[in-house]
Image (cartoon, rainbow, N blue to C red; front, top):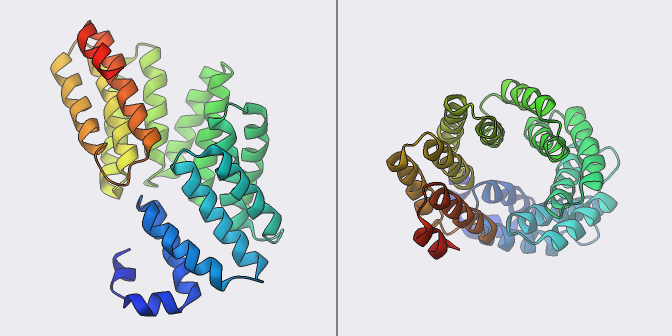
Length: 274
């Protein structure tokens, strides 16, 4: 993003490829409004070019999913897959990943599983480690929803080992922390929550930081350390004020405030957060 901002704005806007290339850095930096400006510019210049229109539709699917608009995320992802060349594994892995995640959030687990398996294969073919790790995490979530918890724990550890310092690996740490929390392995759960926070702080992922902090809050509350639980929730609440945070992420933060308050026996606070 810094490199793009070093370029004169009129130069970027005059070159459709630069407009398109600017979209993903902005999306991954959680600057969705700014990304959509360049999507519109790239789209205007891409008329008659199905492959580029498919790539832009894939980016729009990602933006819609981040905003919590599952219906539009599905529509854009399906459009992208219809437009993209069959051998464009990079773009197809991203489009299929977003379609599978949209199905997951809608509770359509069978459809999500099928699409995410296809997305992971496309990611492997193209060497897209980010998409491969992300699809792996959501396949784990489907297994967890089906009660395959021991299998899921091993799969999360595999994602963490293979993903290294990829930003999305913070989500694998958070999910594994929640699983360990449910098994009452609280110290191990706290360790993975802290790793999620540290990794997302290095990469600037605000929503991933929030997930790590709110998971750590639940664990600390279960350990009887109410002060540490409140400190973690306050950190999550501060991050929720970031202008790029989606409404879905803010709702998650409020839900965890309720859970931590209930776990601490503070019914008045829980009622206020509800």
